[in-house]
Image 1 (cartoon, rainbow, N blue to C red):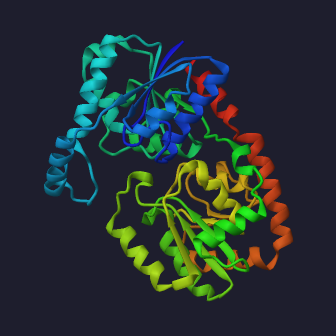
Image 2: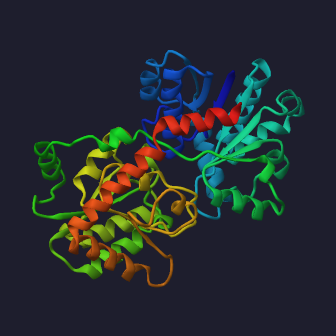
Image 3: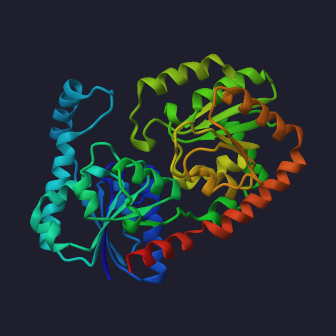
Length: 398
């Protein structure tokens, strides 16, 4: 079966600059290298390191779309005029991707075409010849809420691969009709054994020293993008309220993964972290293949999403690393995280105090939460290993 996976073309594949969707595509590629169930082609944005790493794949063709510095220049001008939310919309870059993708789909034949997450990719279907050529072969793998400005006609032409039941329910509400016949659930997966591996004490101490965290300090870890929706403000407020000298908040992440881009919000948070002195360690972006070491360094992970997150990889990564998890009962998170083994908080006006109490609870009963963390680790490894994700993805395309 010839399958084309079209990434969002924002971040490269392999995931040398991070990003959950790029990571998940990489897992599909690597599992397919073993199983060889698909004749696989992946379209990605260009990155020299990604291109270098992709040479190890024997059964996957990677097609890289080059970025244009000229278009980036004009996109910044257009965003400055049109963007009301301060985000980089990159209208011209996306138009270039659509044109190149349309050309590729016309010149090649695939049994299945899977668009990954970004709604703008579905604009290729405005070309009637492409829509007709690939009728019944189109899939939209959605990892976030369905974009408000997406073409409902384009969505109706695709089968939908969704990462949670929450997302399925939400799509029905947004589209104003029952989409169940088009929807299939493909739960996220990842390399659990990678996160579960042992991290020698000597190397732990070296990493602590590098980060400036004393050996006796307890570490509360946040991992993810530095955006308000991830609950980093509320977690920082909870750390301030704890007022404990024996705890350090380790913030691992950046505004836009490994792109080097920042934001007004991230810069404000960095000023806030600096004001808290030794109570906060901000690492910035950490490459995905290194982040397991930071989980292993931590005593507890606090990932308090305050938006309806369809499903977060960071939550199950923390569990796989074998550390206690505090998160929220948001979106599809309860479909991945068991309340018996982790702390699931409600998103309400008391969330700051609830985070504070939850951190206190974990440190007050370390043996209890060590045992629960082991059970969470076992549950995650049994249900969300890469092979489970790959098998689910592949069978839905059959």
